[in-house]
Length: 107
Image (tube, rainbow, N blue to C red; front, side, top):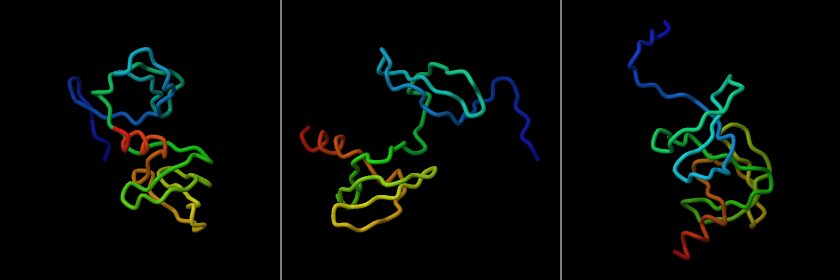
């Protein structure tokens, strides 16, 4: 059965970040699924479901610290070739960009 929404209900809308080039670091342009229009939202009103990685992005496992390159992605899954030569399918939420990890270590 479909939930009936009423004025005043608080909802979550699935959207893709459409631009990470904002003049306001506390807001982002997002495009709701099924829409052709971007909206500008406060980051306080958002929650990351899973990060997006591109093929060839250098990533590091959050828990393992193993580094590698993204070979392919599908939804929230990444196929990673680690520097050791092994291949593995990893949840995107378990990875971080190598450059971000390096920035965390330097801080």
